[in-house]
Image (tube, rainbow, N blue to C red; front, side, top):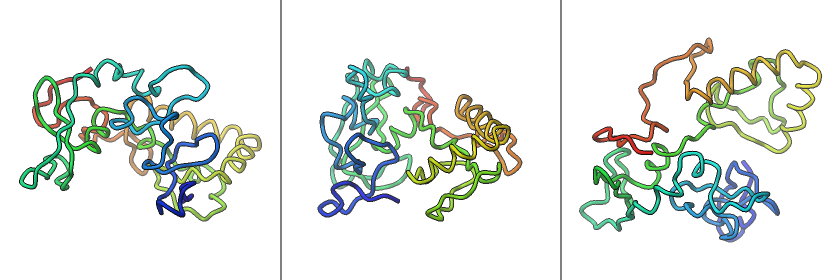
Length: 205
């Protein structure tokens, strides 16, 4: 995993998102490249556009939704998030049902993290990452810079295998499908990305 550009001071590791001028961990993102909703989505801006919101926030209309949210500082007796059961310092209050959840759970529920559905290309014939990263069959991959060129060569030399992997990965992403070992759709009853309150199932945006 790549170190944050400010690793000597923060000791953090870079986000999976590449940023012009170097990679940063989530704590070191420069303000000028943060989405206006960064505290909720933790995404960077598209540096080639004039938008002040990331693509995810624009797709799901969070540039309208965020003004209705409240961030509450937790007291010592109310630090546990009811979803992940972790102790946190701040929670988000949902506007319609008034339930609370931590910022991390809010992101998981209300923002679609497509890396959850990415597929390891190795079972489809692609060589392994040159850094010897072991990637899950489905889920967040290593995204090493050195792996990009290998995947491009694989696409050029074995276009049919690449297309089979690419088509299946996009199918999983577009439909938010988890796949089993045989790449068949499974129902994991997950709340990730469904944009419903985890407690009462109120639908948002």
